[in-house]
Picture 1 (tube, rainbow, N blue to C red):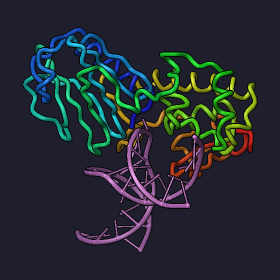
Picture 2 (tube, rainbow, N blue to C red):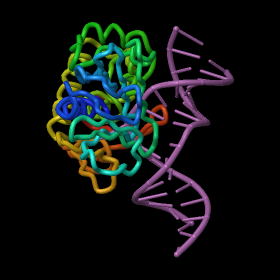
Picture 3 (cartoon, rainbow, N blue to C red):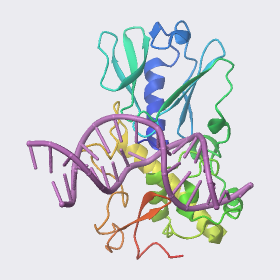
Length: 254
DNA sequence: AACGGAACCTGAAAGC
DNA sequence: TGCTTTCAGGTTCCGT
């Protein structure tokens, strides 16, 4: 269930595994013979420009992962695609099948990609611009952060974590945040992304919802445990059908 | 135009 | 034990 940090770590792994390499074989015939010019990321999308000018777009959905295996290894459980380069082979596995792979022969991105707002790592985040954008909605700040056209890459975990770091109540209306709040929020987003990049970096990513996976987060998935900052009990609520975790004491209310 | 809710799909855990 | 319900860090579509 990947968000910006997990997709960024996947990007770095894929760049090492297949960046600059020629595709010797693939589950998608059209890819054979192409060279992977680079592995890029924007929001939760991976973008792989190929030597012919075609571009491969990959979205991990909720459960998608790229794994490195040996060329001689058989299909992995839930394998949906494979790309072989030299002796190595990368596999896309996705039990829940929400992930997507799109080969754009003309390089034109899918609509969802084209509509993405600024990516914090790729484009940076401007507090004034974000503040102006937040003025245009009556939704809660938590729901608004999940809107990929406002900001690319923040998902349910990063939203909760960033708001906790910024001490902002997730139920607060987005248009009620002043510039000072938005500055704290921007700092919170960067801090949370950095923290997650540091704690999850591995050749094989493990998502927190998987059985037995560690939970490195401050509030996500921590209902009824003490807030790491003020020791009040973390609460779980539902917003727009998704779980939100927050501290009712140190995150300033609506 | 913007918003909330259901739908898409599968597996694991919790509840009965 | 086995059946049912709930939940999951994704987007998309549909109706209001």
